[in-house]
Image 1 (cartoon, one colour):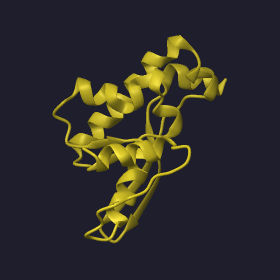
Image 2 (image 1 turned 90 degrees about the vertical axis):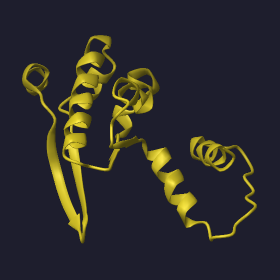
Image 3 (image 1 turned 30 degrees about the vertical axis):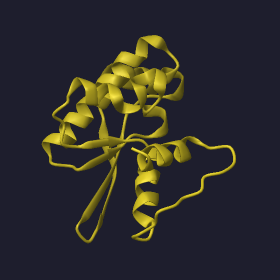
Image 4 (image 1 turned 90 degrees about the horizontal axis):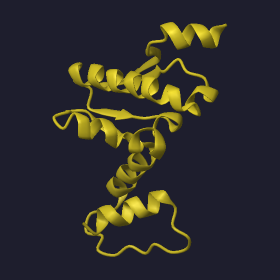
Length: 135
C-alpha cells in the first residue's frame, strides 16, 4: 500500500538536516522504491521530482547539490546533465559522488604540484581527475 500511496501522492521531502558552523547539509528523499526505478513509465515522474527539487534548492541559494546513486543514472537523466541542459542559468552545481570526490582530491594536492601518475585500471573517478587536470 505504501508504494501505491507514494506513486500517487509522493513529493520530495527533507529527511535529515545538519549544521556544521556555517555549513548547512540536508538529505532530501524521493519517495520511490527500487522497482520503480526500473519501470520505464516511472522515469518521467522521478526526473520531474528531481528537477523540482533542484529548482527549489536553486531558489533557496544552495551552492552544491549531490545526486544519490539511484538518482544519477546515465539512462535516467545523463548523470544530472539533463537538468543542467534544461536550465542553463542554474546557480546550484549539480554533482554526482564521483565529481565531488574529484573536486576534493584536486583541492588536496600541494601547491606547485606539476606531475601526477595515474596507473592501473582507471575507475570513473580517475578519468574525471585526468580530464580535469588536462583541460
